[in-house]
Image (cartoon, rainbow, N blue to C red; front, side, top):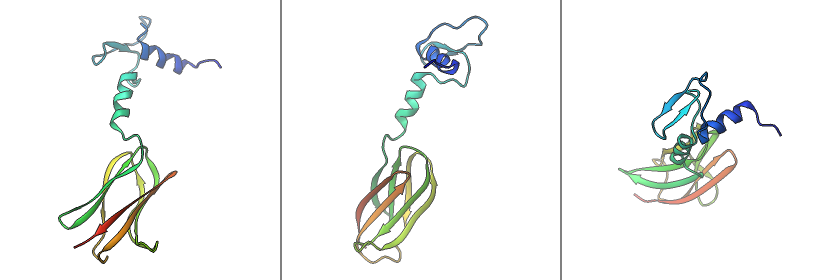
Length: 140
């Protein structure tokens, strides 16, 4: 397999090979290298962005704040269809928290608990290729 021009440019930027004088070079003060194009991202910059995003999908917590329950969800990638629902122990959906698109990162969603009686519930988060569940207790 022959490397493409784009691959070669990205590799040369990542390892710091000097570009010909005809190339437009921009300094990168973070690591002291030159880039041939402002849109090319160095390996160090790419790693910094990757470190700021969650590495896996998970329900971080379900907590109560001022009488309102909130589910905190961490998403590793953008989701075309995210569905968050609350189910009772019989498996019946009793509340819909969120349905729609979602971006990667940490998000909070309010759980509508006004019409729910005290008890044990399961919060289920479903996205593109994953399903998470966590139980919580509703007590007033």
